[in-house]
Length: 240
Length: 224
Ligand SMILES: Nc1ncnc2c1ncn2[C@@H]1O[C@H](COP(=O)(O)OP(=O)(O)OP(=O)(O)O)[C@@H](O)[C@H]1O
Ligand SMILES: [Mg+2]
Image (tube, rainbow over all chains, first blue to last red; front, side, top):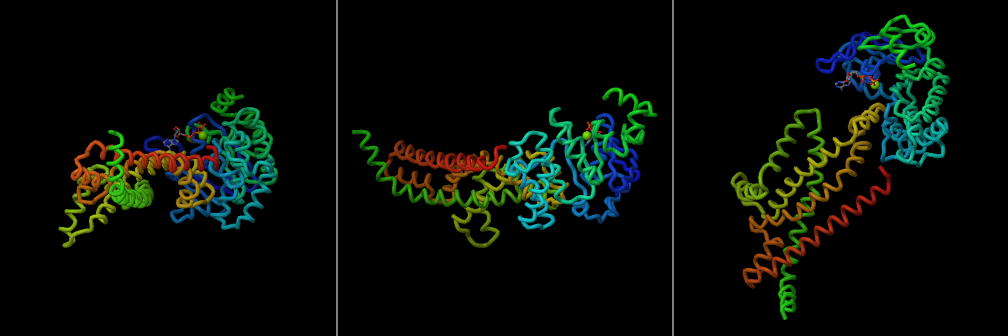
């Protein structure tokens, strides 16, 4: 589903990504961990071209993302993204947040888009909040709306960049549980998170990144139970 | 009685002043309307990645913000005919210059408003497959408009007052009319005071009806 080869990214002199390779199969859930500044967000953002890789090649669902003539907007419709800070549109209600892109991009009618949106709001447990504005929702609720908003475009892949790290602890669970449902429904996911419980429960593979490289890769059991690399061990010791 | 005399002077002057006020209001409405439209597009041009859009926008803004309105009026009213070979209409010249001048300031207001919207908003919209233009139109601009209402209202008030400069090209706006009345009556204190009061009433109206009401109405929609 996703093939990324030798991805490099520099900001001026700063080399943030130095040759990342990743293959994600359909329905696979890949968890990315690593210290702050290791390039996790940058890598994720390269996958939907919010950042343009300096070098390397990315293919998603057979479409070459990094090709010069790539139709970015078309590709992005297939790649949902959930941000650390939710980034809901504050001037729109929950349901309007969800219907906007399907109506403007997929050209659904308002009724069709609303039907999709209501189904998704029910799925994330917020059917009674459709007319609430983002600032009337808690962080956890906002993030669930943001997930529903991404899903409304019927993406083939979902990218999550630390979706729970801006949340109060008591709201982390509700968001993770939505993500677990999604994984069980067979969504292909790349998730940057330090929620080890989530990684163990639904992660097929864990990547440990440091200084712009993938240092170690394996099943959650291998990485958390028996890490081989010294840096992985040091990092896990710090966060566990 | 002194007060009675003042009122008499005012009563005589008011109908004449209102004729000038009409010019003032017309010029202000035109400048603010066209200035807003120009300002929006120039702001978008200045924020564009294309140099062909960005540089003309920068030059336009710097020209109209960097030179005095007085000089701009002279330039277009007295200078332009030299180029065209025929004189230009005073009112047209004034409306043209005021619109362009207003547009330059409003462009900077819009630019700042657009840039004040968090980067994550554009990224979220683009990540959903929306084009840059769609994201601007449906996500960024509605939020930016709300933020620029106070500075925009302020600019409208400045514009109203700046129209008084058109007297230099011989247009009888309210300030110029006041001057003419004084030339006949020698009542400088009473007339200038009345002129000032009429300006103040209008600026208060702009800030009350336009700024406060608009702000309240937009805030009712969402509370962010
Ligand atoms: N737009 C940018 N311009 C310049 N430098 C950037 C930019 N975006 C990221 N960086 C730098 O790239 C490096 C990697 O950042 P990135 O956000 O990918 O790290 P991360 O692994 O996601 O960290 P965190 O866990 O803190 O989110 C950092 O040093 C950061 O300062
Ligand atoms: Mg990050």
